[in-house]
Image (cartoon, rainbow, N blue to C red):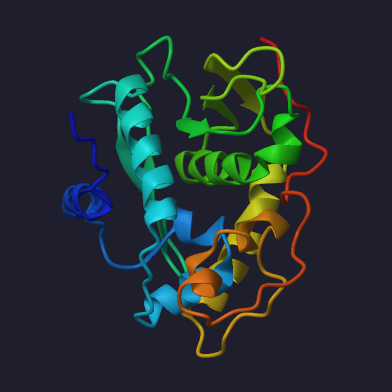
Length: 236
């Protein structure tokens, strides 16, 4: 028996999968919430046409897409929303169906390799920023965050673990979040390259803007999300 690894075929299969996902997930023109909860420098460069392909990053993204497809109901719950104003900001809510027990509030579905034991506000605060944006757009002060930890707790048990967080935003929090969203959108739409601190610290490690294109050396960024200090869960 002859066993020979074929990395060329692996790269081609990965590239074809990425093309299928990109073709399926065409977005309306404009700024989207997903552009504003990650490194603004990367979002800005991509708007200038600098889009890098990193096989490792593609693998992570595609794996997340597959997990997402299993958890999200197939029809009728995904909702496209718009925060009108200057500038307008688009969003796509993974699941929102007020008549449903599970999805009566805006729901964001994620998968991650982060430990299931890490406090969600510390490790995954950008997810809360995304959910808050959709709650703001829909006028709902409560949202649901569904997180599939595909490596479990990384220590005692590495079986995937699903955790669900019901988050109730306090009075005024969503209204305070809107100016920050607008500020980030103006930066991404602006003519000047964003400063090096408009990102989370952990984003630089695998960013293709640095590793593939060499357009950024990285730098110190935010340690915590904008909503740092928000209670991890709200009962009732």
